[in-house]
Amino acid sequence: MAVKELLGQLHEAAECPRKQLEKYLGEGKKVIAMAPVYGPQEIVHSMGLVPMGVWGADVEINEAKKYYPAFICSVMQTILELGIKGEYKGVSAIIIPSLCDSLKTLGQNWKYAVADIPFIPMTYPQNRRQDYGVKFTRAGYGRVISDLEVATGARFSEPALAKSNALYNEHNRAMREFAEIASYADITAAQRSDVFKSAWFMTVEEHTAIVKELNEELKKGPRAEGKLRVLVTGILADSPSLLKIFDDNGIQVAFDDVANESRQYRTDVPEMANPVDALAHKFANMDNCTLLYDRDKKRVDYIIEQAKAHEAQGVIVLMTKFCDPEEFDYVPIKRACDKAGLMHLNIEVDRQMVNYEQAGTMIQAFKEMC
Ligand code: SF4
Image (cartoon, rainbow, N blue to C red; front, side, top):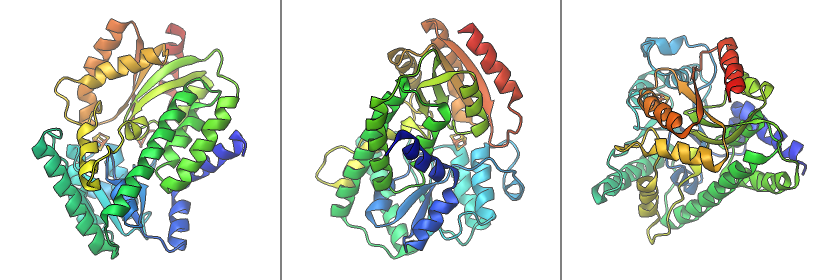
């Protein structure tokens, strides 16, 4: 299949998750909603269920205001809004990890606001690397498994999980390869985003097959010429209006450190005799993310290293409004960029944003200065 058709398939899935949900429900499958940022998709898949990501949407917030104050991130607010409005109808349960304070409140509000979709908590430890941290994560996965069994009637087995772990590792490799190829390929920021976004709404088997084919086709195609190479960092980078501004200004996403994009695919499940232990070690091995405890802020060094490795001329920080973890990281990122001689731009983003004129002007000025 040609690049255009492959990207077309991914665009369709990225643009219309409800259609994907209807498709899987129509095939008699049970679907589990996965809230940000890291949930055990491998466990869900191994039980014959379809994990689908829920990261909110660019919609007006009305109902969720009854549960949240205005100063909480719009990712949380719009997930709840969509839940209350019935957008996730048909989903068997939602898994909500506990990795930031806002996420902790989402589960509690969900129980009352969307009572027909069971809430399954996944409580992760802050100190994830030590033995006790791994044990804690493993216990959390045990709770998820038993709650999934109750909510769906599906059964868990270790051999099935071992197979799912291997499939997700294969997907990780395909996505990492895509990020490298897309760094130099003639591909727009919007198309690149579709590849990452669609992963949340397709089965891992379908998505891996398309991305592998896309990688092979892109390798044969032309390289991007004369564009401004930037590293993009943040929680989300999927706003069509913002991506259009990137593309109108000739911005090439040389690499990303975005929570719902490359951060998902950096760490594989290690080879271990017990697949649940292996999955708990995967979480222990994850790093360089705002939501993972990091006393030394190694994420900052990671951003600079990746910017240099991918020949980025600048760094664009997409700062999700009211996201405390990301806000804490901004000053060290700014200082590190200054020290490394990299231009940087901080754009505040919000699922509620309708006017991108200011962002457009900032990107134009950034381009001229780089
Ligand atoms: S990490 Fe930030 S954007 Fe994500 S849920 Fe927490 S506060 Fe919201």
